Amino acid sequence: MDALLYILAVLSLGLAALYTGVTLVNLLVFRAPPAKVGSARHPVSILIPARDEVSNIEAALTAALAQKDAQIEVVVCDDGSTDGTDSVVSRIAANDPRVRLIRGVELPPGWNGKQHACHQLALAARHPRLLFVDADVRLQPDAVVRMSGYLDAHNLSLVSGFPHQITRTLPEIIAIPQILVLLLGYLPFPMARMSNALGFAAGCGQLMLVERTAYEESGGHEAFRNRMHDGLNLPRNVRKTGGRTDILDATPLAKVRMYDNWADIWQGFTKNATEGMATPSALPVWTVLLGGGHILPFLVLALAWLSGASAAAQFALLAIMFVFAARILLAWKVRQHPVSVLLHPVGVGVTLWIQWSALRSARKGQRAVWRGRTYDVG
Image 1 (tube, one colour):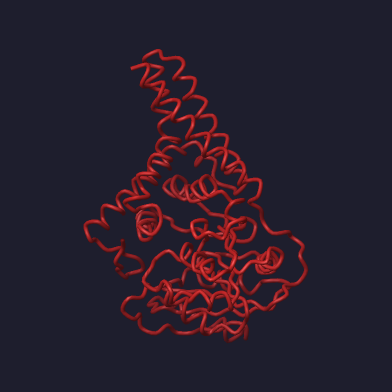
Image 2 (tube, rainbow, N blue to C red):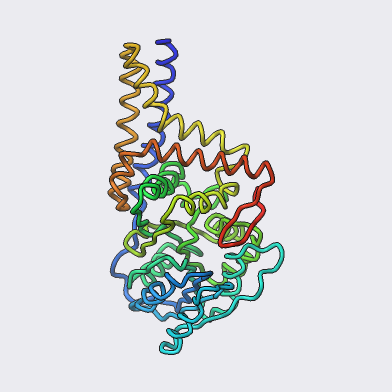
């Protein structure tokens, strides 16, 4: 028993050290664009897909229209809303010529709803740079000029960032921060910036700026019209056609509250899980990385303490210290709720639960449901 605990403790320490090392390196290079970069060199079309967003759309437009030092237009695609979203946009557009409303056509067979709305927005856009923004995102007044400046400074075709994630309820506090735990803990940013390999492609569909030429050469949203995960697919396709992509720290540039209840968290994370972690080949590896590095140390420590295996207990405790050191620094960097750090192992467990459930549902032929529409997954 002591020998087994010792082996598990060493394994957990190695996996925890891997996570901590990658996180620390990434935190050194994961930065927001400079606050003072002058005026944006190119006009930007801010493109907002909206389906039943009456509670969000006015605040989203107000924030978008407050952009400083940038020539912008704001185009909203009303994607079959039934709650009066279009009326709010029309009222604002009547008083500000920078705002336009387009009414989405009926969703064609084989298309994902958001991808179709974004496709129509890109066709309607008039400017050479396209900033796709979800309706629940609130841009800061310097978001466009700073993102555009970052694109220029690093000779990129596409840049995206995760806005500051507002979390208020316990399910949000537990689950939402795991997005950046995974990104910063397991995607080596220096390598992703040096290599244009598709495996390093990643992004956030909530906030994504792309050169129109690169967007069109990659096939735009039409190229992955039947897929759910725009944050992965658009950067990957831009890289395929030779464009360079990157992710920046958008914490000071925008904020968003993704979901405010457990049902939406479950549906939101499940709908595109099979395009990321939840595949038969990838999920077992992720389970070893996450379960072994973030949950196993606590189990080993408890068992070692009960059995008096002091060496195993020491290794397990060191693994826990590594993980929490990285989590504290990440939470400070992107302003995550401190309770998310305390409940970090629970968050990892919830993440794996969602991913395995999504994979099992996909294998059974079940369909994802989002915004009143159903989609095939897997």
